Image (cartoon, rainbow, N blue to C red; front, side, top):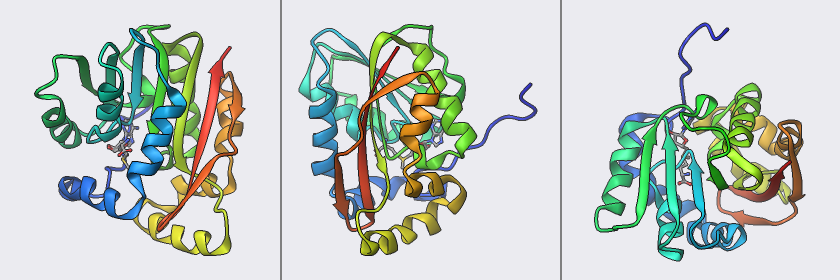
Length: 218
Ligand SMILES: C[S@@+](CC[C@H](N)C(=O)[O-])C[C@H]1O[C@@H](n2cnc3c(N)ncnc32)[C@H](O)[C@@H]1O
């Protein structure tokens, strides 16, 4: 039984800083490069239903919407402030994009709803148990054979990258980021019932190494 309502770490740790998130991420993470790579890797097909977990201010969500106008897209995030910023990006789109406020450990979606789930820079906001809970939820809401595509901080590709990542750890916390540094995420993904298809690709950034993980639901 869950004893208390879960909490979450906002995009830049403090809710008051969320309004600066897009600016900070575009300056510090080679955002266009790694998010474009994630969009190309996920390559959803026309008419599919895509879930963006921890969508935040909706930058990645918007890239998927622009790539394939016939997608039905759902973004989920715990932070209403981030979702308000996201909404402004979809104001002029007639495409089916819906944004939900909620905890990813307890998704408000029917089982077997989505063809593809994507997520960027989200899992390092979760403890190991939360990571596993969220991955099980994603597995539940994906259709059988559905695909999961993640880009998040992974094992640093050099000692300099390891040092740079300390900045992220100081901001987002050591407990939630430790497993990312150890490269544990693919193991947790398999534990949640997925087959990891690929986890070798990565991009070095001014704040550390972003790893791409592709998995398939059984
Ligand atoms: C660093 S931001 C990433 C946002 C976006 N995906 C991107 O790539 O720019 C992490 C987001 O995860 C959200 N978040 C953290 N814990 C969450 C949880 N348990 N459930 C849902 N969202 C959560 C935060 O509110 C924040 O918007």
